[in-house]
Length: 292
Image 1 (cartoon, rainbow, N blue to C red):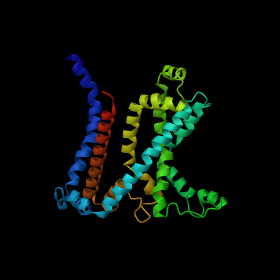
Image 2: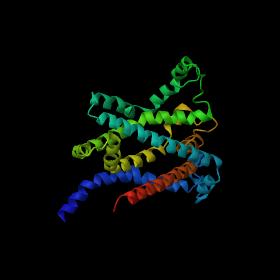
Image 3: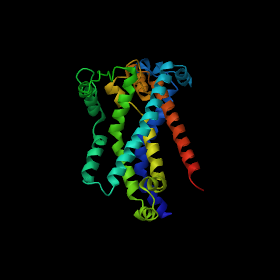
Image 4: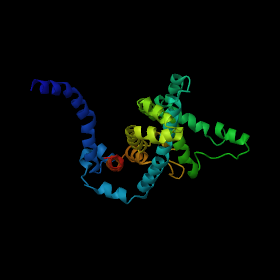
C-alpha cells in the first residue's frame, strides 16, 4: 500500500502537467469544434452558439478540405518511403566496418534535424528560386531550361517533399543505426560461413531483426508527415493554385486568418481521426505479419 502511495506521489506532478497542458486543451478544442466560435464570439461570448456536428458536416462538403487531404496523402505516400529509404540506407553505410569518421558523419547528417524548420525553409526557397536559385543555375550549366520549382503546381509539392526528407531523415537514421548495432554479429558470421552473399544477409538477417525498429520508425514518420505545415507555410504559402495546402495549413488558415476557431478545431479532430485510423491499421498489419 505504501509503495502504491509513493508511486502516485511521484506520478502526480507529471499527471498534473499532462492534464493542464494536454488533456484540458484537447477537451477545450473538442468543445470548440461543436460551436460556431469565431471573431464575433471573441468580441462577445454571448454570440457563441452550439452547432453540434455542423462543422464536421460542412468540412465533408467542402472541396478545399478534400483537396488539402489529398495533398497531405500525396506528401505522406511519397515522402515517407523516401525518408525511410534514405534513413535506412545511410544507417547501413554508417554501420559498415569500412566506414571512417562515423561520429563526424552522424553529427553532420543529424544537424538538419535540430535546425529551425523556418530558417532552413527560407534558405531552400532561395536555392530553388526560378531566376536566382543555385539549383536552376546548375541546371543551366548542364543545358537544362530553368524550372519554376515553387511556382508550378506540378513541381511545388515534390520540392517540399525533397526538403522534408532532407530535413528529417537524420532522426530515423539514428534510430535505424541503434537497431543495426543491436543485431548480434554472430548471425552475420554464421551466414558468411554458410556462403550467404551480402544481399542475402540483408534480406534474411538485417530486415527481420529490424522489424520492431521499422515499425516504430514507420508509425513516427507517418504521424509526423501528416502534420505538414511549416514547409508550405514558408516556401509556398499554400500555392500555387492551392497545390500545397495541407490539412494542418487549412486549420491554421481557418483559425488564425479567418478566426473561425470552431471550424479550425473540427479540422484538427478530423486530422486526428485520420492519423489514428491509419496508425491502428498499420499496427494491425504489422502484427499479422509477425510469425505466431
